[in-house]
Amino acid sequence: MSVLRIRGRALPTGDDVDLYADGDRWTTDPVPGAELVAEGWLLPGLVDAHTHPGTEEMDQPLDDEVLRADLRRHVESGVTLIRSPGLAGNPPDWFGVDPDLPRAVHAGPWFAQQGQFFDGWGRRPAHADLPALAAEQAAATGWVKLIGDWRPDDEPFPEPVVRAVVERVHAAGGRVAVHAQTAPGGAIAVAAGVDSLEHGMCLDPALLDRMAQQGTALTPTLSGITGSLARRREQASRWYVDGATAHPALTAAAVEAGVVVLAGTDSPQKHGRVAEEIRALAAAGVPAHDALAAGSWAARGYLGLPGLQPGAPADAVVYADDPRIDLTQLDAPRAVILRGRRVR
Image 1 (cartoon, rainbow, N blue to C red):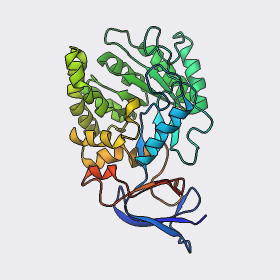
Image 2 (cartoon, rainbow, N blue to C red; image 1 turned 45 degrees about the vertical axis):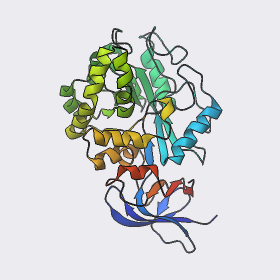
Image 3 (cartoon, rainbow, N blue to C red; image 1 turned 135 degrees about the vertical axis):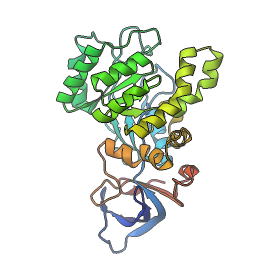
Image 4 (cartoon, rainbow, N blue to C red; image 1 turned 120 degrees about the vertical axis):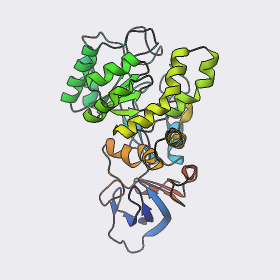
Protein backbone atom coordinates (compact mmCIF):
# COMPACT_ATOMS: atom_id res chain seq x y z
CA MET A 1 0.00 0.00 0.00
CA SER A 2 1.39 3.42 -0.98
CA VAL A 3 2.24 5.98 1.68
CA LEU A 4 -0.27 8.80 1.99
CA ARG A 5 0.81 12.45 2.09
CA ILE A 6 -1.01 15.70 2.88
CA ARG A 7 0.24 19.25 3.02
CA GLY A 8 -1.03 22.73 3.72
CA ARG A 9 -1.64 25.09 6.61
CA ALA A 10 -2.29 23.22 9.82
CA LEU A 11 -4.56 24.49 12.55
CA PRO A 12 -4.48 25.74 15.23
CA THR A 13 -1.27 27.61 14.32
CA GLY A 14 -1.74 28.00 10.57
CA ASP A 15 1.85 26.89 9.98
CA ASP A 16 2.75 25.15 6.72
CA VAL A 17 3.23 21.41 7.16
CA ASP A 18 4.01 18.45 4.93
CA LEU A 19 2.93 15.18 6.53
CA TYR A 20 3.39 11.53 5.60
CA ALA A 21 1.42 8.65 7.11
CA ASP A 22 3.83 6.12 8.56
CA GLY A 23 1.16 3.53 9.24
CA ASP A 24 -1.07 5.18 11.86
CA ARG A 25 1.43 7.92 12.74
CA TRP A 26 2.31 11.20 11.11
CA THR A 27 5.90 11.90 10.17
CA THR A 28 7.58 14.85 8.49
CA ASP A 29 10.30 12.62 7.07
CA PRO A 30 9.83 12.54 3.28
CA VAL A 31 8.87 9.15 1.86
CA PRO A 32 9.84 8.56 -1.79
CA GLY A 33 6.83 7.76 -3.93
CA ALA A 34 4.28 8.94 -1.35
CA GLU A 35 0.90 9.84 -2.84
CA LEU A 36 -0.22 13.43 -2.26
CA VAL A 37 -3.93 12.93 -1.64
CA ALA A 38 -4.96 16.43 -0.54
CA GLU A 39 -3.70 19.89 0.24
CA GLY A 40 -5.34 22.94 1.74
CA TRP A 41 -6.23 23.81 5.33
CA LEU A 42 -5.62 20.89 7.68
CA LEU A 43 -7.33 19.96 10.94
CA PRO A 44 -6.44 16.90 13.04
CA GLY A 45 -9.95 15.50 12.46
CA LEU A 46 -13.24 16.67 13.92
CA VAL A 47 -14.50 15.42 17.29
CA ASP A 48 -18.04 14.82 18.52
CA ALA A 49 -17.56 14.73 22.28
CA HIS A 50 -21.16 13.86 23.17
CA THR A 51 -22.86 11.34 20.91
CA HIS A 52 -24.91 8.22 21.57
CA PRO A 53 -24.71 6.04 18.44
CA GLY A 54 -26.31 2.64 18.02
CA THR A 55 -30.04 3.20 18.58
CA GLU A 56 -32.75 4.80 16.46
CA GLU A 57 -35.02 5.71 19.39
CA MET A 58 -34.64 6.46 23.07
CA ASP A 59 -34.83 3.37 25.32
CA GLN A 60 -33.98 0.89 22.53
CA PRO A 61 -31.12 -1.63 22.94
CA LEU A 62 -27.80 -1.20 21.16
CA ASP A 63 -27.96 -2.43 17.56
CA ASP A 64 -24.73 -3.30 15.70
CA GLU A 65 -26.05 -2.34 12.26
CA VAL A 66 -27.39 0.98 13.49
CA LEU A 67 -24.13 1.58 15.34
CA ARG A 68 -22.08 1.07 12.16
CA ALA A 69 -24.40 3.31 10.14
CA ASP A 70 -24.23 6.08 12.74
CA LEU A 71 -20.44 5.92 12.88
CA ARG A 72 -20.17 5.99 9.09
CA ARG A 73 -22.13 9.25 9.11
CA HIS A 74 -19.63 10.65 11.58
CA VAL A 75 -16.67 9.72 9.36
CA GLU A 76 -18.30 11.13 6.24
CA SER A 77 -18.57 14.48 8.01
CA GLY A 78 -14.89 14.52 8.99
CA VAL A 79 -15.24 13.17 12.54
CA THR A 80 -12.31 10.89 13.37
CA LEU A 81 -12.88 10.67 17.14
CA ILE A 82 -16.01 10.44 19.27
CA ARG A 83 -16.71 10.34 22.96
CA SER A 84 -19.87 8.52 23.91
CA PRO A 85 -20.79 9.44 27.50
CA GLY A 86 -23.36 6.70 27.80
CA LEU A 87 -24.35 3.86 25.49
CA ALA A 88 -27.44 1.67 25.35
CA GLY A 89 -25.26 -1.34 26.14
CA ASN A 90 -21.67 -2.52 26.13
CA PRO A 91 -20.29 -1.96 22.62
CA PRO A 92 -18.88 -4.71 20.38
CA ASP A 93 -15.15 -5.37 20.23
CA TRP A 94 -14.76 -3.48 16.94
CA PHE A 95 -16.09 -0.23 18.42
CA GLY A 96 -13.37 2.42 18.29
CA VAL A 97 -10.86 0.22 16.45
CA ASP A 98 -12.54 -0.62 13.14
CA PRO A 99 -10.20 0.93 10.52
CA ASP A 100 -13.08 2.57 8.64
CA LEU A 101 -14.85 4.05 11.67
CA PRO A 102 -13.92 6.73 14.21
CA ARG A 103 -11.72 6.23 17.20
CA ALA A 104 -13.88 6.20 20.30
CA VAL A 105 -13.88 6.57 24.05
CA HIS A 106 -16.98 5.71 26.01
CA ALA A 107 -18.50 5.38 29.46
CA GLY A 108 -20.49 2.19 28.94
CA PRO A 109 -24.13 2.29 30.08
CA TRP A 110 -25.32 5.25 32.14
CA PHE A 111 -25.84 5.24 35.92
CA ALA A 112 -29.13 6.78 37.06
CA GLN A 113 -31.39 6.93 40.10
CA GLN A 114 -34.52 4.87 40.57
CA GLY A 115 -37.48 6.29 38.65
CA GLN A 116 -35.30 8.53 36.48
CA PHE A 117 -33.95 8.37 32.93
CA PHE A 118 -35.32 6.40 29.96
CA ASP A 119 -36.80 2.98 30.70
CA GLY A 120 -34.51 0.24 29.46
CA TRP A 121 -31.38 2.40 29.51
CA GLY A 122 -28.80 2.61 32.23
CA ARG A 123 -28.17 0.98 35.58
CA ARG A 124 -29.82 2.10 38.82
CA PRO A 125 -27.84 0.73 41.75
CA ALA A 126 -28.31 1.78 45.36
CA HIS A 127 -26.36 4.89 46.30
CA ALA A 128 -24.12 2.86 48.61
CA ASP A 129 -23.13 0.50 45.79
CA LEU A 130 -22.59 3.15 43.11
CA PRO A 131 -18.99 4.28 43.85
CA ALA A 132 -17.59 0.74 43.62
CA LEU A 133 -19.55 -0.03 40.46
CA ALA A 134 -18.48 3.25 38.91
CA ALA A 135 -14.83 2.51 39.68
CA GLU A 136 -15.20 -0.90 38.04
CA GLN A 137 -16.67 0.73 34.94
CA ALA A 138 -13.92 3.35 34.83
CA ALA A 139 -11.23 0.70 35.11
CA ALA A 140 -12.70 -0.98 32.02
CA THR A 141 -13.45 2.02 29.80
CA GLY A 142 -11.87 5.12 31.36
CA TRP A 143 -15.16 7.02 31.75
CA VAL A 144 -18.32 6.88 33.86
CA LYS A 145 -21.55 8.77 33.16
CA LEU A 146 -24.08 9.74 35.83
CA ILE A 147 -27.56 11.09 35.10
CA GLY A 148 -27.15 13.75 37.76
CA ASP A 149 -30.68 15.09 37.43
CA TRP A 150 -33.73 14.33 35.32
CA ARG A 151 -37.13 16.02 35.55
CA PRO A 152 -37.07 19.48 37.11
CA ASP A 153 -38.93 18.30 40.23
CA ASP A 154 -36.76 15.19 40.74
CA GLU A 155 -34.11 15.07 43.42
CA PRO A 156 -30.65 15.09 41.83
CA PHE A 157 -27.94 12.68 42.88
CA PRO A 158 -26.85 13.82 46.37
CA GLU A 159 -23.53 15.62 46.47
CA PRO A 160 -21.86 13.12 48.86
CA VAL A 161 -22.71 10.29 46.44
CA VAL A 162 -21.33 12.15 43.42
CA ARG A 163 -18.23 13.13 45.38
CA ALA A 164 -17.66 9.50 46.41
CA VAL A 165 -18.01 8.42 42.77
CA VAL A 166 -15.47 11.02 41.67
CA GLU A 167 -12.99 9.93 44.32
CA ARG A 168 -13.28 6.22 43.50
CA VAL A 169 -13.21 6.75 39.74
CA HIS A 170 -10.19 9.03 39.93
CA ALA A 171 -8.42 6.46 42.08
CA ALA A 172 -9.11 3.93 39.31
CA GLY A 173 -7.56 6.29 36.74
CA GLY A 174 -10.87 7.25 35.13
CA ARG A 175 -13.03 10.32 34.64
CA VAL A 176 -16.63 11.21 35.45
CA ALA A 177 -19.17 12.89 33.17
CA VAL A 178 -22.48 14.09 34.61
CA HIS A 179 -25.72 14.96 32.83
CA ALA A 180 -27.17 18.08 34.42
CA GLN A 181 -29.93 20.36 33.15
CA THR A 182 -31.19 21.91 36.38
CA ALA A 183 -29.47 24.47 38.58
CA PRO A 184 -29.20 22.10 41.59
CA GLY A 185 -27.89 19.25 39.44
CA GLY A 186 -25.21 21.44 37.88
CA ALA A 187 -24.19 22.93 41.21
CA ILE A 188 -23.78 19.48 42.78
CA ALA A 189 -21.69 18.22 39.86
CA VAL A 190 -19.33 21.20 40.04
CA ALA A 191 -19.05 21.01 43.83
CA ALA A 192 -18.19 17.31 43.58
CA GLY A 193 -15.37 18.03 41.11
CA VAL A 194 -16.62 16.04 38.11
CA ASP A 195 -14.50 15.99 34.97
CA SER A 196 -17.15 17.07 32.50
CA LEU A 197 -20.57 18.62 32.81
CA GLU A 198 -22.88 17.51 30.02
CA HIS A 199 -25.44 20.09 28.85
CA GLY A 200 -25.09 22.38 31.89
CA MET A 201 -28.33 24.19 31.14
CA CYS A 202 -29.51 26.40 34.03
CA LEU A 203 -25.99 26.43 35.47
CA ASP A 204 -25.19 29.39 37.71
CA PRO A 205 -22.60 31.47 35.80
CA ALA A 206 -20.89 32.17 39.10
CA LEU A 207 -19.63 28.56 39.01
CA LEU A 208 -17.67 28.99 35.77
CA ASP A 209 -14.49 30.24 37.46
CA ARG A 210 -14.47 27.21 39.73
CA MET A 211 -14.97 24.91 36.75
CA ALA A 212 -11.99 26.50 35.01
CA GLN A 213 -9.82 26.21 38.13
CA GLN A 214 -10.59 22.55 38.80
CA GLY A 215 -10.62 21.45 35.16
CA THR A 216 -14.32 20.63 34.78
CA ALA A 217 -15.15 20.76 31.07
CA LEU A 218 -18.52 21.83 29.67
CA THR A 219 -20.21 20.06 26.76
CA PRO A 220 -23.17 22.40 26.17
CA THR A 221 -24.87 20.42 23.35
CA LEU A 222 -26.03 23.86 22.31
CA SER A 223 -27.63 23.12 18.95
CA GLY A 224 -29.79 20.39 20.45
CA ILE A 225 -30.95 22.47 23.38
CA THR A 226 -31.75 25.65 21.48
CA GLY A 227 -33.17 23.67 18.57
CA SER A 228 -36.03 22.39 20.74
CA LEU A 229 -37.03 25.82 22.04
CA ALA A 230 -40.05 26.27 19.75
CA ARG A 231 -41.53 22.92 20.74
CA ARG A 232 -40.86 23.58 24.42
CA ARG A 233 -42.62 26.93 24.21
CA GLU A 234 -45.69 25.18 22.85
CA GLN A 235 -45.52 22.72 25.73
CA ALA A 236 -45.25 25.55 28.26
CA SER A 237 -42.01 24.10 29.66
CA ARG A 238 -41.09 27.33 31.44
CA TRP A 239 -38.01 26.01 33.20
CA TYR A 240 -36.62 24.61 29.95
CA VAL A 241 -37.39 27.70 27.90
CA ASP A 242 -35.68 29.95 30.43
CA GLY A 243 -32.63 27.71 30.69
CA ALA A 244 -32.31 27.16 26.94
CA THR A 245 -32.71 30.86 26.19
CA ALA A 246 -29.83 31.68 28.54
CA HIS A 247 -27.66 28.78 27.36
CA PRO A 248 -25.84 30.50 24.46
CA ALA A 249 -24.68 33.36 26.69
CA LEU A 250 -23.64 30.86 29.38
CA THR A 251 -21.58 28.92 26.85
CA ALA A 252 -19.81 32.04 25.59
CA ALA A 253 -19.12 33.09 29.19
CA ALA A 254 -17.65 29.65 29.91
CA VAL A 255 -15.14 30.05 27.08
CA GLU A 256 -14.25 33.54 28.31
CA ALA A 257 -13.75 32.17 31.84
CA GLY A 258 -11.27 29.59 30.56
CA VAL A 259 -13.51 26.52 30.86
CA VAL A 260 -12.70 23.74 28.38
CA VAL A 261 -15.75 23.65 26.11
CA LEU A 262 -16.37 20.57 23.96
CA ALA A 263 -18.59 20.27 20.89
CA GLY A 264 -21.17 17.51 21.17
CA THR A 265 -24.41 16.84 19.32
CA ASP A 266 -26.26 14.52 21.76
CA SER A 267 -29.33 13.68 19.70
CA PRO A 268 -29.51 10.27 17.98
CA GLN A 269 -30.68 12.13 14.88
CA LYS A 270 -27.52 14.28 14.71
CA HIS A 271 -24.79 11.78 13.86
CA GLY A 272 -22.37 13.40 11.47
CA ARG A 273 -23.62 16.89 12.27
CA VAL A 274 -21.01 18.24 14.66
CA ALA A 275 -20.47 21.13 12.22
CA GLU A 276 -23.89 22.41 13.29
CA GLU A 277 -22.75 22.42 16.91
CA ILE A 278 -19.54 24.26 16.06
CA ARG A 279 -21.55 26.90 14.20
CA ALA A 280 -23.99 27.14 17.12
CA LEU A 281 -21.07 27.88 19.43
CA ALA A 282 -19.90 30.64 17.09
CA ALA A 283 -23.42 32.06 16.83
CA ALA A 284 -23.53 32.20 20.64
CA GLY A 285 -20.54 34.54 20.65
CA VAL A 286 -17.69 32.06 20.95
CA PRO A 287 -14.82 33.19 18.67
CA ALA A 288 -14.69 31.03 15.54
CA HIS A 289 -11.17 29.81 16.42
CA ASP A 290 -12.38 28.59 19.83
CA ALA A 291 -15.60 27.11 18.42
CA LEU A 292 -13.57 25.08 15.94
CA ALA A 293 -11.13 24.06 18.66
CA ALA A 294 -14.06 22.68 20.69
CA GLY A 295 -14.81 20.31 17.82
CA SER A 296 -11.23 19.50 16.81
CA TRP A 297 -7.78 20.01 18.33
CA ALA A 298 -8.83 21.11 21.85
CA ALA A 299 -11.29 18.23 22.14
CA ARG A 300 -8.68 15.76 20.92
CA GLY A 301 -6.22 17.09 23.48
CA TYR A 302 -8.78 16.79 26.25
CA LEU A 303 -9.40 13.16 25.23
CA GLY A 304 -5.68 12.39 25.13
CA LEU A 305 -4.77 12.61 21.44
CA PRO A 306 -2.27 15.09 19.95
CA GLY A 307 -2.87 17.04 16.76
CA LEU A 308 -0.96 17.36 13.51
CA GLN A 309 2.59 16.67 14.63
CA PRO A 310 5.18 13.95 14.16
CA GLY A 311 4.26 10.82 16.08
CA ALA A 312 0.57 11.77 16.43
CA PRO A 313 -2.18 9.45 15.21
CA ALA A 314 -2.58 9.87 11.46
CA ASP A 315 -5.99 11.55 11.38
CA ALA A 316 -6.85 14.71 9.46
CA VAL A 317 -9.59 16.51 7.61
CA VAL A 318 -8.66 18.83 4.76
CA TYR A 319 -10.56 21.92 3.56
CA ALA A 320 -10.10 24.23 0.60
CA ASP A 321 -9.95 27.39 2.71
CA ASP A 322 -9.57 28.43 6.34
CA PRO A 323 -12.73 27.08 8.04
CA ARG A 324 -12.46 29.71 10.78
CA ILE A 325 -13.24 32.37 8.18
CA ASP A 326 -16.23 30.46 6.84
CA LEU A 327 -17.55 27.66 9.08
CA THR A 328 -19.72 26.34 6.25
CA GLN A 329 -16.44 24.92 4.93
CA LEU A 330 -16.98 22.15 7.46
CA ASP A 331 -19.77 20.73 5.30
CA ALA A 332 -17.44 20.06 2.36
CA PRO A 333 -14.11 18.47 3.34
CA ARG A 334 -11.70 17.77 0.51
CA ALA A 335 -10.46 14.65 2.24
CA VAL A 336 -10.86 12.74 5.49
CA ILE A 337 -7.84 10.76 6.71
CA LEU A 338 -8.30 8.15 9.44
CA ARG A 339 -5.52 5.91 10.78
CA GLY A 340 -3.32 6.84 7.85
CA ARG A 341 -5.91 5.94 5.19
CA ARG A 342 -8.15 8.14 3.12
CA VAL A 343 -11.74 7.26 3.99
CA ARG A 344 -13.35 10.10 2.04
